[in-house]
Every structure is written in structure tokens, then in C-alpha cells.
Amino acid sequence: MRLPSVDIFTCREPACLYSTVASNIPLPTSPSTSRVAAPSTLTAMQQLVQDALNTSNLGAQATERVEGQFHHIQLAKLADGDALMIKYPSNHNIRLLRHERQTLEAEYRTTSILREFTQLPVPEIVDYDGHGSVFGSPYLLTARTPGQRLSEALPYTSITEKNSIDRMLGSVVCTLASLTSPRFGPIHEVSGGNGSDSWRETFLGMLEAALQDAEDMLITLPYEFLRQRVGQHRSSLDHITVPRLVAFDICDPENVLVDEDTKQITCLMGLSNSIWGDPLMSDVVANGSDDFCRRYEDSFPCEEDAQVRRSIYAVYRAVVQIVAHHYRPYSGIDELEARRSMTHALNELAHE
Image (cartoon, rainbow, N blue to C red; front, side, top):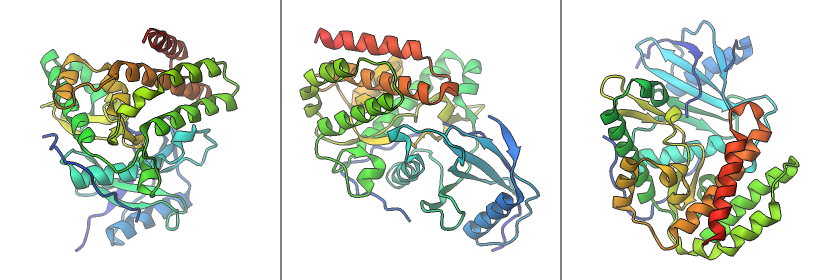
């Protein structure tokens, strides 16, 4: 089959709807400012797309790249209107937090799981190379899905449409939470045969990693007080015995694409920060709108000690935001607000 030619240009990094999926599932295994790319990059990009499409009929004239937070993203547009998105790590010296070091693999694995076990509108994977043997760098190649970012559509969305979108997003999180795994932990670790049988062990390890990131940057935090206060309530984490899929950024308006006319969700991005754990850990579950929470709580009523865990997770999210701000001051994080959230959560734990 002869495929249409392609032109390659840039795309911003982004961040119907559900069918309930039951019980434990097997895990798949691996198979800003723009600038014109160097000729060698263009050549490599053309070769990558040629290999993925099994054709040499390419008509790319030039390519630009956009600096994403952790990755370069380029869009290879086919002459018939279809397009491929190519994501690969930035070659800049971006300092990452410990939990951010495997985001490309995590996105690949999460997307694979959702495509195989749900009807959620996530990108179609065309190719993935975690070792860089073909392109000279790890990359993820996906089909582009049309749609407008929810963040751009919201100013022109009615209250009724917003409430409908919130209910749809609640259904999305319910679908994720219906997927379970034999073990807790970051999705790339569990897929690699690691992980833990204990949510307490997993979460406290995540918190400790964030605190170590802070210590590495000499950030001022009440380290021992944080460890002590969370440790006093660690038994509440033992009520979570089923590892459920949590994608922290999937409901971020930057990562949700909607149809400009119908406001139906067309694509969910934001899949690079995912774990098998407690869905209550997600900010959108803890602080979602009434329409969102009603849809979620219809399927997943609050378990014992839920409020304690909400406060513990709020401490974790605030620490991560504070640390990320110091690692990447240009990221737009409000450190003062994060510190206020941390203090509020610690005070709540003091009264539990």
C-alpha cells in the first residue's frame, strides 16, 4: 500500500467515554520556544517515520521542534490530513525529580493498558523504542487525535457544558480506578516485575523520594516534622489493599482535548505520571467539582480513614510542587500556595 507524503512541523506538549473494566489485568511489556532542527535531526526524523509506516514516500521539507517540559515533540503531518506525534527526551540538562525519570516509558505503558482494556480516547501507539537503537534516543510515536485543549475551550463553554465535562472526567477516573494490578508502585516498575504488596510501603517510599529531592536542593522544609506527622497516621494507608490505576495529570485541562462544537472529549493525554495505588491520591479526586465527585463516589464510596489519607496525600502533593518549583523556577508553580496547602494539611492531621 502506498501511503501519502508527510510534512513535519511542531506541536506543543499537551498534558463515549468509558467502559468499566473488571479485576486484575496482565501488564504489557516493552517492545515554548521553537527552532529549526539540524539537518541530521530532520534526516533521522524522516527515517523514523519511513520505518514506522513502512514506506519511503515522504515529502518533508523542514522540521521545527518545541521545547516541552521534559521532551521534544514534533508533528509529522501526512498529506491526507492524518498526523503522527513524535516525542523524545530533551537533550538539555533538565534536572528531574526522582519520580520524573521514566516518564516516556510510563506514558507508553499507561497508554497501552488503556487502549487494550478500556474504550477511553487515548492516542494510538504507532511505535515505541525505549533504548534509542533506531533514532539515537528513546521515542514514542503516536497518531494525533484532533481536538481543542479544554484549557482553551473553557472560556467559551457554558455552565451546562462544564458540568457535563466534569461528569465525563469523573467517568474517566472511575474507568482508571476499575483497572487493578497485583502490586503497588509506579507503572513502569510494576510492569518490569517490581513493585510492592504494601500501599503503605509504596506511598512512604514516594514521599521519602520527594523529601530527598528537596534535601538535594537544600530546600527549607520541616523534614523531620513531616516524616513524623505522616508516620503517626501511616496505618490509615493499610486500608488500601487493591492497587488501582491512577494517572495524576489525565484531567488537567491542558491534557484533555474536546470537540470545539459538541464539547465531547476527543482525547486524553497526560499519561506519563501514573501509578498503581489509591485513586484518592489524585488531586482531581480530592478536590474535584461536585459533578465530578458525585460521578466518582457513585462507583467508589469513601473507605475507612479516607479523610486522613486525603490530608496525607495533600502533604505529598504540596512537597512535590515545592520541590518542582525549585528545580524548575520557570514552571509557573506558586510556591507560597503550595506551602499554605502543606501547612493546612499538616494542621488537619494534627486534629485527626
